[in-house]
Image 1 (cartoon, rainbow, N blue to C red):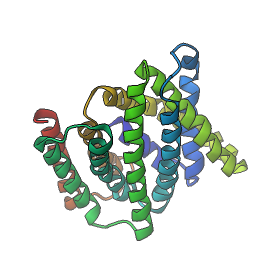
Image 2: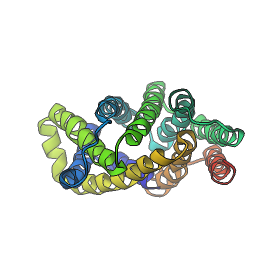
Image 3: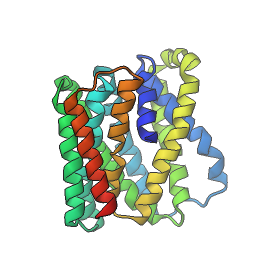
Image 4: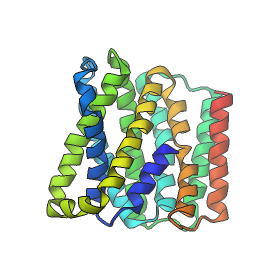
Length: 264
């Protein structure tokens, strides 16, 4: 739910999505910065952090464009639902994680639910393309970060430096690209950006801790149950129309999560 809330705050912000994203990621970096002087350095994971930074740059660039072109209820399920399938295949091939029948079944339910959610009132083709690009980037940074957090002496080291790299590198890049427009947007959106930045640390920090300990294919699919909360938030707070088809898709996603939790 935390991840869906972050994206709802981002979507509900002003029309300058790149500035909004810069504020969120910059806020996350500022919050964790003091911990860089306390936690151990992430020895053994610097290359993984560099790869994660590159994958996050693609992810955030695609995310900004997708949200600028379509409703959250149309593109969010596509970007989050396509990710676990790609991540599951990559985790088996790259990380050597096991793919059991229960995990495969749970991922299948989550994926089918995603397709149903996006089927009715499908987003424009360009928005769909950016959403799929976002999903592929999510899968990439999921596998990269799973390797990185497992390579460090302590998970907290990777969490801290991951948010610093993303906030300073990508948040700073986005802010510089927008220039004066970023300063204008920051005057009215900084509070929302700070809240979303703090929630991002909670959401992805917990995910990274889980990736260090558990099966990435299963955990990545469970994380995408945020689609259900995203639909609820989009309907209640963003006043977007959620039809029966999208509601049924949300139910399938919840069923897939139940399979992953109880059987996998």
